[in-house]
Image (cartoon, rainbow, N blue to C red; front, side, top):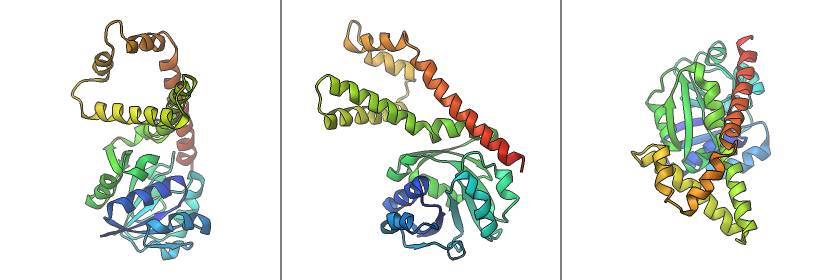
Length: 258
């Protein structure tokens, strides 16, 4: 069993802890100053603490606090060069963190589906060692990218689940308006997204080919696709990603200037 500490038990930290508990591969120590946050994750980890000094004995420490809290936490913990610090805060650069710790720094941008083992994560900074790779593999899929692309990843896979949830909600609502129950419509919409995503990952065909595979001539799908293709939906989805990416760059600039 690998020992890992997660500092910050908000939405992302909780998702990490719950995801790791599913695998049985890690002994997790959870650290947060809020006792109620610790209560929510206590069933999924070996120990909890409100004191960072009690939480940083692990070789692998994961920092999942809000960006504006990163500096305070880094000042409060004393990690050695034998430890690895994995950071998951939007906009906080590897350079900023490395200047405040002796630990090896790996920067990631994960997302909420880590909770179910379906995380998509981008990784920058020092090349992940075997322990970090095992951690990421336990939670889902990860790709290594240049640090300069982390703001784009923040928008695409970090913010992306919210955009997908929004689209699932829209499909669900349309199904309800057509007479389905809310529960049935939600299940059908969510499972459709899940199945379509898995098909993209496993198929040798590209996305355009998969779209055409569903669009039978004079069938139902092609009627719906005509509406989508004649709309601005593709542009607006892009705009949502660009807005999130721009905000990530603004955060990065704040930390680059410090």
